[in-house]
Length: 59
Image (cartoon, rainbow, N blue to C red):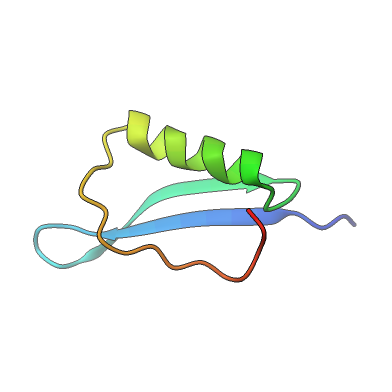
């Protein structure tokens, strides 16, 4: 079994309910993976981000 990274993006909708807006599985939490994940969310229309929480990693 190999180790993988899971990137999960959750957002609050206009009713204040949480929605899963992105999920990507990849080989690591490297900067290139984070960048691709965030660009995908942006291309899909994600705007107005006010808070990002992440664990400690170099990406």
